[in-house]
Length: 108
Image: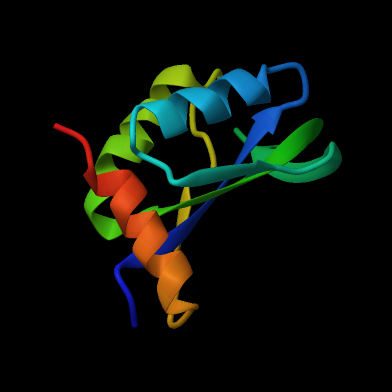
C-alpha cells in the first residue's frame, strides 16, 4: 500500500474541465488531473431516475491532500453532491509515486 491515491469524480459536460484541472494542480492538491471524454450517466437522485452527460475526471494525489482536494472540488462543483471516490494505489513505479508526492507536498 502507498500513500498515493486516485480520486474519481465527474463534472457536467459544460463545466470548464481544463480550468478545474489547472486550478487543482496549481493549488498543489493534485499532481495530475485527467479529463475523460463525455459520457452518459444514469443515476437515482431524490427518488427519480435521472440521466446527464458528464465528463469523468481522474485525479492523482496523496492521502495527505485528500481533504484539501475534496474542498476544492466541492467549491468548484455545481452539484449538490458531487462524486468523490478515493481509491488506494497498492503499487506503482517508484519514480511516478515519488513525483506525485513531490508535486503535492511542495506547498506552504
